[in-house]
Length: 427
Ligand SMILES: [Zn+2]
Image (cartoon, rainbow, N blue to C red; front, side):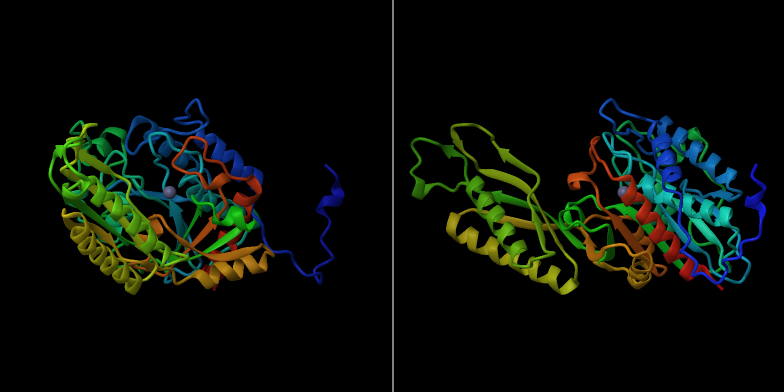
């Protein structure tokens, strides 16, 4: 070895470059984890609490131990890995996401948020940086909700959005329970679900995630500073008309439930556009009866999904939906029964300024964005200050085997995470 490398550095007066994570090492861990449950088209099938999920968890826990972290598992299978701080009274600064995937999922959704957290820890270890507050990396159980409902199960139980008993009793289509599957794969942990009793709750929670939409890529921007997540209202709607023969029934005398449905689709699209740029309106599921080529449909059941970043906007959309349905009943002679099926309140992330500041420190292009999808961070925001960092994904495509992201974007997002966490965890 070159002995000159051991000479003391003399350039201490020079400005120090900000600490950086190791991009290739982060990428390698992403690829190693993606090999577990890999699909032929380059995606990942690692559905919650399956054997593949167990293998993925085992790999992540092995990395956690190798980094010197203390690992605990709670009673819904959430994993927590802690790096001690120098001040035992300080609340932890946490980050994390999920490693379960959709049945035909991608390599980056969720996995990136967990592995970026491990990369932050390894960077601090390598640089010998101690933080006053402990650093914690969490892996939330069953974020995707494709095998067990509800979605975002582990983080929701953690903040008390649903009871631990209900979560453990949830079943898949074959009747397997969450509790049974946790035990089977060895992740039915002894720790109570929630912030550690008697200890301070998280001082901050950050989640890095691929955007899963096209906004950043379209704008050519590297970092999305997520200001919040859209509130959602999901409706079940039934249009009731009358079955009649497609030939003998004159247009003026028919009560066509499909026509009523089509008018609602048009209205939903218009009302979302009137709430640009963040209003959303979707009719994604339609069931026509009797579903026969030569019968005017007498009944159509369909869904409406409305989203908006603030409560007042959601209320305007709700009022617009009901007004449109009343008008369409009048025009079509059909009845429209509108029922609210489920709703999620809009969420604002308090720590957007820490994320923005970190992006600025690193000289990275950034813009404010809203999350149109649910994430574990949305639940965490109910109990602690929370921030989210988005990076672009190719063509905005996710929940798909071809989901893709650029190594330099993933590296940049993890650097933003590092500095946002350091800023909150320092003495
Ligand atoms: Zn995700």
